[in-house]
Amino acid sequence: MSLTLFLDPVFEDHKTGRHPESPARIEAIRKRLTDERIKALGKRGTIRRATVEEVTRIHGRDYVKQLEKTAAMGGGRLDADTVMSAESFEVAMKAAGTAIAGVDTVLKGVSKRALCLFRPPGHHALADEAMGFCLLNNVAIAAAHARAHHQLDRVLIVDFDIHHGNGTQDLFYSDGQVVFFSSQRFPFWPGSGAKDETGAGAGLGATFNLPVKYGTAPADFRKAFESTLMQAVRLAKPQILLVSAGFDAHREDPIGDLGLGNEDFEYLTKLVCDVADRECEGRLVSVLEGGYNVDRLAECVDLHAEGLAKS
Ligand SMILES: [Zn+2]
Image (tube, protein in one colour):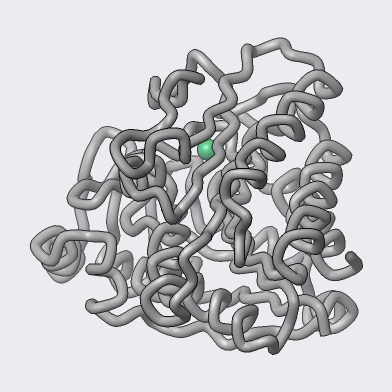
């Protein structure tokens, strides 16, 4: 079996009110990825909660406690964009744990690929700070688990969300063992992700940024994405590929829009699968980040899953 897919209604329990990052995103994906569809694509994985030890490989203990406390008090606003409901801490811990379950599934050889469809997203979350709809940095927690639990020392994270994965970049900026490649609309929120942000110290040269101007033709985007990805791959020689899969660069996305269509996400999926097949026996774990047109999101996630399953 080549794909294990993680998807659960519990990820609709993180309530955000009138907000683009809403439970309707997972609801739309669940409507599309029915039991029957999942069966055709692979198998369903069992979600799990992360332990405090697992998330504190990345986040500060006090920050995690603060999130728990905010939820216990009924939730609240952490910054202008990021809100929590009473359930949000538990849901975020389950998203982080599910990213870890994805890594375990792939590294134990249960399946070649894993796709973790959850919310809240993670790639803006910093060590001690929530940001941009993100509470815990799921992909970073997955990378830390691959290192600590499976003793990997070469991990490549690829982030094609329209927003810069500033949290992930920051967490591994001077690391060197985790290579990070992010493409983003630029200039755009959160402002980082320029080409000259390339890492520091032991991580100097291990961060790859591809800033993309609004109005860039999809064909040019593809070319630049592939060429920067290959540079990152050559340096990383990855043992596993982790993908921060955001679909908000879709031309119909209400808050993103970099002119991409469904077919471009199919292309990106095939590209990362080919890399994983060439470099690391196909091992790839993809985690959901953004994508706010729920209908396009569900279509693109379905195409992404199909690409992961068939190759
Ligand atoms: Zn985004």
